[in-house]
Image (cartoon, rainbow, N blue to C red; front, top):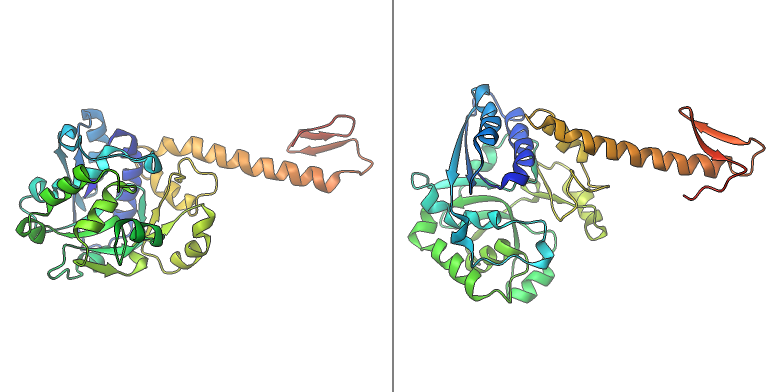
Length: 305
């Protein structure tokens, strides 16, 4: 299941395409899309996936005013109020005792059957450790801190212990403590009752220096790639595995969204080639440096790189 707003629909579709294209023939998926009002045209586009015969698509409406007391933060400007919709999962999905929640900035690289079949026992959910934990643990007084982008949720246990109410209450009464929005709240309320997933089920990658080493480790044998931070494949210049995102986006009704990303990437690559060409030929007797029929450097004219 997903929680989304209109801006993230194309990226969610890339996620769905990756799930369907890496599943086995015996797998069938029921996708639940929690939203506050996707128009008919958008719903129709998303519904094209159901024509594959491998899935059903279900749209569940929520009133976003229910989440007015849930804080958004300066650190998470790229995240909308939709991230809190998962607090209502037990009520929105009354017939389900277990659900796999995925953020929309994710691509799945393997069959999800193994992950879904993991036993959560008496835990509230199963999560992988967050890429950066020390600051969050110290701020919230926790011994562990998890990333909630991939969450195998035990809805039966949530109902038994009234978890939804507790999540809302903490979000409302602890605004000064919250940085990483709903993720902070879930970690606090479910502390001690979270089953640890292997990192391959939530390989968090980012272009930021702080996670370069983690990127290299996480991507080896990863099953789910999670593009964390605000530099996403659709707007970041050096986002790892951008081509994976584009590959699956091209399989969706939003394939045309890949065009500006590809053009931007091409422009950046040409800019690098331009700089290298000038550096290599600088000082030679030739008056011009020409690349693909375009004059990149004229000896009599200074060029600002």
